[in-house]
Image 1 (cartoon, rainbow, N blue to C red):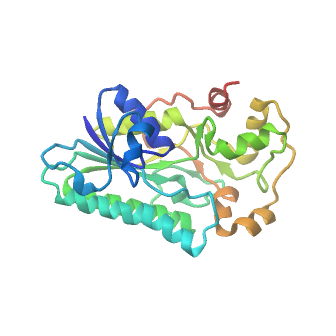
Image 2: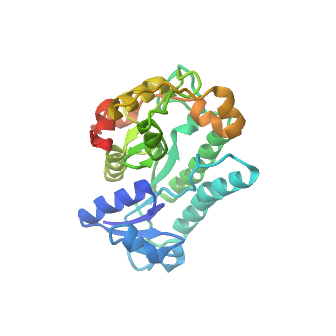
Length: 299
């Protein structure tokens, strides 16, 4: 299978490249640093521009995961432009290029995030919800998905993967949390009652590969574990796995003062279920939080 991947040098992209190369697939990564792709992405081939693709080769699938980190700094006007360009504009460029191909791929798996839903409170959510939230993160995800949906008019099956915070060793959400909790300085965020969807890296990779292979799958899929937890439950579980206390909560006012609108990602949440993933037959390797944390942290 010939697969073109954007965002290949990121956490999920590198893991996908490792799996696909082991399975014998040919993988190309569209990257601003194509000379680094082979070393970072298990020997995948780097592509500095889409126009470098050899049109004589048939492309079987495209997986679009590109996007600047959304939670590493406040959403200033300049940062919002960076986030928009790296997701919405890039996906528009990608779909425009697909329209010009003589031999188009059969499937586009395009990234999104659970932030599409905004702060859902205690409402139990799944993919049946048709309206996104209203904060900047929600609008960003909605516009990102709309650009991907345009590929359907080209006869391409489009899958939209709404990813929750990913659990991985020393990376993703645990890159910041694990060191703090390891020192016994962790605690809930705000009230701790906000729901916090999550997914183990192995399941994120497994689900994307599953959706790529199953031709009946299209539309939105929630990439989150079935075992939904509140933030307070997550922090207690993390502290327990690390053998540390969790008694230093971060007050809501401090998060709002320091992060601005970005704080909605921490103080809001989604009581989310991966209904369509389960109905399609995907079996989660890590459906519950405690075993997932133990697997990631090696305890």
